[in-house]
Length: 414
Image 1 (cartoon, rainbow, N blue to C red):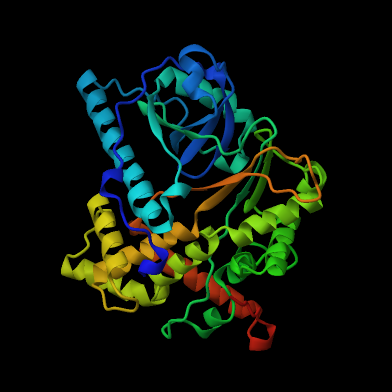
Image 2: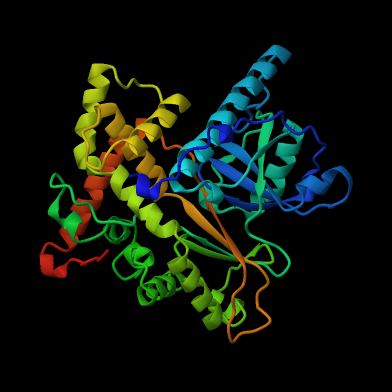
């Protein structure tokens, strides 16, 4: 496994410094994006004075369920309780940073992981941000909002760009076909995404995108994958121009789209992140959920795993053990489960590609500089193992119900 893994610099272990203590104004931030656990706000304020460090930054806040109407979010907790919550948050963010840098970064490449910095936030600021963002948020996200009780937020570089920069966000998904003999044979033919899309959408609305084309390293297949993503993005492909999300088709929105597409395909083929990502997904998930779930139950019975989520020490140790082991070596039940969970994180990351100065001065031989960042790198919840199995079974059953004959099934190719 060492051929795809860099050695770990022990001096690079990340620890959060003391949070920035700076006066934040809600008017300086605009709603940017959100996932299930976090909501992001983009800095649009002044670049002068003490706020210069906020230029080009995104503020990430944790979300929680919207309180029941009439209920107060202020529980009247004491100062000591507030300090305890802050210490808990500091530890949480330290663990997340360590996981991103010293686990995912160690596996995938430290250069792809964005730096992070803590900043103090007030309940008043968060309430204002929630109110300002309400009309811009997707309807299916409104049951949650930024938690006003969090005393800390996270600042990360804004990869959506500004000025003449153009950014692409891609969710590459699963990059391999399982080889384990313990899985349903259909998984050897049809990739997870190409089965899953029929559970989420009817056949006539299903995307033509196959992640294995994107990972293939073949220019024609990668271009085919990009075309499919553009035709039916389904939250897997987003374009930002001057830092703003493009709502229309990028074919019309991006200047000289055909030239840009060839540049994007070249980056995806030539940069090493996609083949490394696919290799990691595959080698960390040797058994598939069908094979690893019995090991999960065995680890619970033996006490190797408990009902609690793994500690950051567990993740760092699992990463080190994975790197030091030979391919296909026998590992403990706990190690097999944690490796599978690392693969789950890697299957759900997003890739941000920021291209400087588009359109370029010359369209004949455009070679703009670019940078790539891997985001959404938080550890997945071990408590969802049963859900992963049940979802997998539902995906396969639905696909086989729709396409019972092998001849009808999509033949995906790595």
